[in-house]
Amino acid sequence: MSIRNPQALRAKISKNVGIDPTDEGCIEWIGGGFSALSWNDETHSVPEWAWTLKHGELPAEGQTIHHKCGNSRCCNVDHLELVESEEAAVI
Ligand SMILES: [Zn+2]
Image 1 (tube, rainbow, N blue to C red):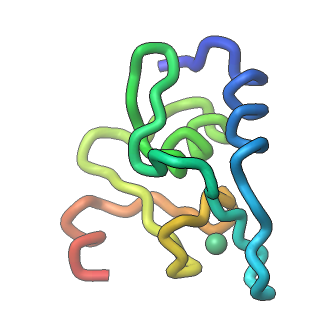
Image 2: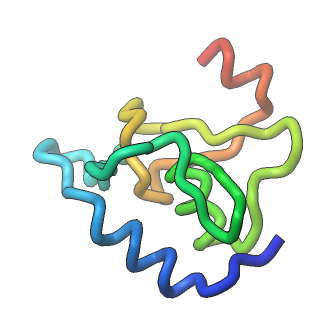
């Protein structure tokens, strides 16, 4: 899947994030609907969209995004990694 108008999506995300006060470098989503951001008639979580903007495609079926920093509101792609869904359940 390719994102239509990725610049506008990036701008929308940028407008709704704040830098975490900790030293982790987290970029926290401060807008509403963190886990349900609609774009191009599709709804995904903000980290999924952030991931997609960087990598060009959504996580594959059976994969999910794990926050390495442990901050579930973080959408800094450097803090995200893809894991198998079953693996995510135990992390
Ligand atoms: Zn983070």
